Length: 205
Image (cartoon, rainbow, N blue to C red):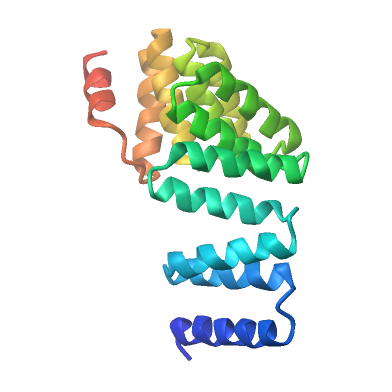
C-alpha cells in the first residue's frame, strides 16, 4: 500500500468516526492534520474550525490555523490565532515561539525577544525558538546574547545548520572573521543555503 493510499484510508476512517461522533474535537483536529498533509487546505481549515467549536481550548488547532494564515501572508491573523493558542493553554511554548517569529517579521523586535524568551523558558529544548531569538538579538545589536543562544541551540543539536549560519553572522558582527568563517563553512557542509552576501563578506574579511 502506498503512502497516499494509507493517508486516504486514514482520512476515510476519521470521517467514518465523525459520522458516529461529530462532537469529538480531537477527531476533527486529526482529520485536519491529515488533510494538511495532502495539501487540502480549505477542507483542513473547516475541520480546524469544527475542532474548536467542539474543543475551544485545543491550542494546537489555533496554531494550525495560524500556519494557514502565514501561508497566505496574513501576519496579523496568524498572530491573533497564536495569541488565542497561548490564552487557551497557558505555558504553550510553541504558541509563544510563533508569536515571537511573527513579531520579528513585523519588525517588533523587542516584543519578539520577550515572546521568544518566554518560549525557551517554557521549553528549554525548543531549538527553533533559540535560533529565532538569536536573530532578534542580532537585530537589536545584542551580539553576545545572539552567540549564547545559538550555541545553546547547538548543544541541543550540534548539526542544526541555522545556528551555525547565525553564529557566522554574529561573529562577523563582532569582528571575529576566523570564527565567522568556521561557522559559515559548517553551515554550508550541513546543506544550509548561506546567503551570497555573507559568503562575499567573509571572503573579504
